[in-house]
Length: 454
Image 1 (cartoon, helix red, strand yellow):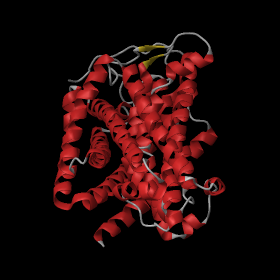
Image 2 (cartoon, rainbow, N blue to C red; image 1 turned 180 degrees about the vertical axis):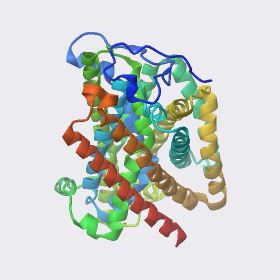
Image 3 (cartoon, one colour; image 1 turned 90 degrees about the vertical axis):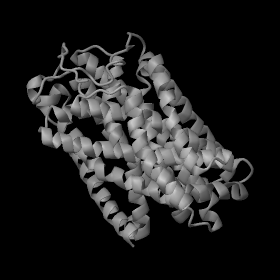
Image 4 (cartoon, rainbow, N blue to C red; image 1 turned 45 degrees about the horizontal axis):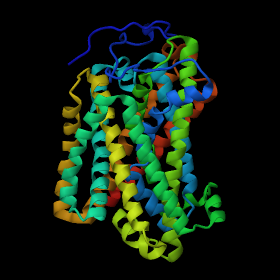
């Protein structure tokens, strides 16, 4: 159902004449401005604003990241830690811009696109974004199915089908309030972090080599194979749907709708996402460190699939390592599916003003992901699902720039952002990041197509 009614915008610093259309009802209307922001000490406000950043951060540690981090660690040791760090810094910048767009304009990124571009352009952007969400959901379906297979021996095909049941969990949490959903996501992130802290302790990496790995090297550019995995890490890290998601869910806080209130909200939202993405940095780095310490140092340089890593961890690292690894993978898959539902709802409402019931939206997205996963699992087994996991990341990289460039453009226009417009240095930095991401992902796409055709 469409939302034709207008909503007031008291104290907004950006007049609607900066857009083609006036604001309409927000996406996720059931939780919009549902969490009050009371006066108090700074640490209390940090706690109030904490949550959206963690929902975003789970997309940076989903099963699609695991394959690239495992491959990078086993093949090149700790060298590509610098790429994970650089990708994370880019993510901090882009997610900060996304939260600022939502808070200042009262529009999420999908609504902003609809209010700026022509109907034909918006339809194309919507199709691309839906494809990216389906590709991301595909990675999470496969990751969760692999985890169920490793932990309980459930065949991959049945594991893929079982992942559809998470729609019930999403429905339950949405009915109980947004804070409960945020709490579950934080708990799952903590579970993943604890699991990989255990893995690092058991793997006993060389700390000096780990520290050196965070220093960028020109070797990454000169070595063709290393560059390919490096760009894969970047493509799997910066997720397009997270930009749409973040620009919407920051509006769940009932901050004061004035210049001062929005400025405070922008600041605390940035703190929230930066802290959350620091956890994502730790987890992605931990996956690569464990892979380097457990596999690369022992001559196992070809470990690139999750199933292979699971089989080798306990023999090489010690008892319990494989089981803990699988638990972390299951938590990662479940976590990412929760946010995928919200992103799909935001995109459909924002671009088309069509609102579906959450369970219908969830089944639609999950159905698109399940069909290719089931077919691949039946016909090709483990090796096929691993290749499908990589292919899903290629689809994600293809869509990324179609979200990044509009975001940077909108936040750099004074007519839309008023006093919150990106400053000169930030505008240059943001466009530089956008161009670099576009160029690297284009290279990855070409190389991937060539690889699949070989």
